[in-house]
Length: 244
Image (tube, rainbow, N blue to C red; front, side, top):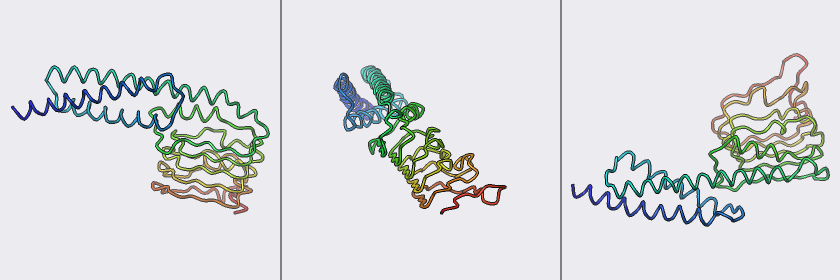
């Protein structure tokens, strides 16, 4: 009985500190511009809070004071989640206002998410990248740490007549690849750190009669679940990778 009392007393103290920390960080974020380092701190604190809440549910804590702190912690977590949604909305708004598709003299583009970036909304991630579609004059594109489960279709649009280099790096939640075979002038392609890919299928080639007709260098690396590669070689009037 004494052990249970001490356990709940410790939980009371730990939860109280966590509530104050979550609330203070949320207050600090509000009204400030996006900052990746601070954002990651908030996400780490949220993970800690969720662990505490789950543990409390499992142990069925009955101490009324501890339960009250848990309710406050839930409220603080909800506030933090709302803040993350606001940040995601702001990111989408920024992408929409960037108008990259109108920058016809842009030849090289890097789209980088921070290394520890995580998301609880894959659809929002895709919406942001969809809005960041560049002008079709682009020659080189590098995308790193994108956390959506699917890349937008514009990546394989055959209207990108000048695209010669494409690097997709550490998009570890993607479980499929866009129709990159439709890019008519693509010479260099690197796909690295796609932990969700188990099969490179027909979608990868697109609808081109000569998929990857200009490709000279192809790199696959860091695909731990990859088991199958569907080749179109031998199909009527289709020859994949003729320049490779």
